[in-house]
Length: 317
Image (cartoon, rainbow, N blue to C red; front, top):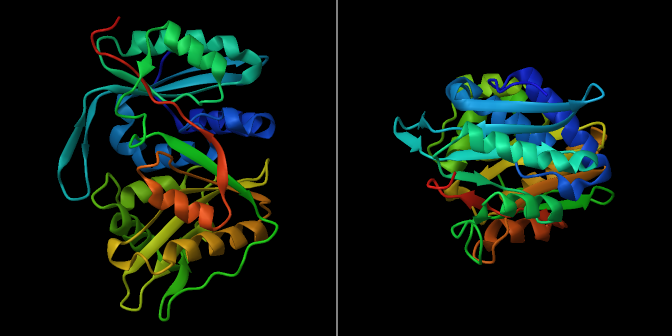
């Protein structure tokens, strides 16, 4: 076991390796923010601006990583419009290999010691009954804002790629890749879809250096007037022959035109050509947030697993 340190690119590659091993045998036990693609996206886009507030601990057995914790501590985040958002609580991304499930207690103890006095949040998987019991034993309770019919809990969806219909774009819209369109277009496509975010050309350049990024699997849709109207990044896990969409989104002014559906279908066909046999994508799972779920269900995805938002109040030890 190593001591608490800042998160490095080498750490993230080790975490991705654990994600691949868990995905191969127990895909339902891969936690939110602990999948191959999520790790790359979260690290690549934000480590330059926010990395000083991140801490991690790694647990190894027989020379192989078997558990890790990545604590995101309070910091100020400058968005693309110049405003600053201040995070006051602590969030933990983590993963424990199911053959070493008992390490979850050590992960919890480390997180509590790393973020004392702060509100602490975590997203274990609903399928991980043992972990949920251990989090409860350490004083973590259901997050009222995260759970329920309008909560922020997420579900992971999956489908195979054996039969993917051809995509259809409205007249004048064209598919591009980030390699073709360039970094400015790739960043603008994301901000057009999601609004002000802590994302910039510099952050995108960092993202391109992460393990698993491929510009030919970063799909954009250009509108007739040149607006970058929709986009998705796909992360190819060659070991498991799976591809993960993260993130994907469409400009509000170009929604309800079928662009999201077209990007998903086009992306899945590209991923199949690259060797993938299965695709995953996450979305809000609560009944009160149906839009993305219905889009994904409409192209053949179905729920694989979901997370359980938990918190420990700031007053708790």
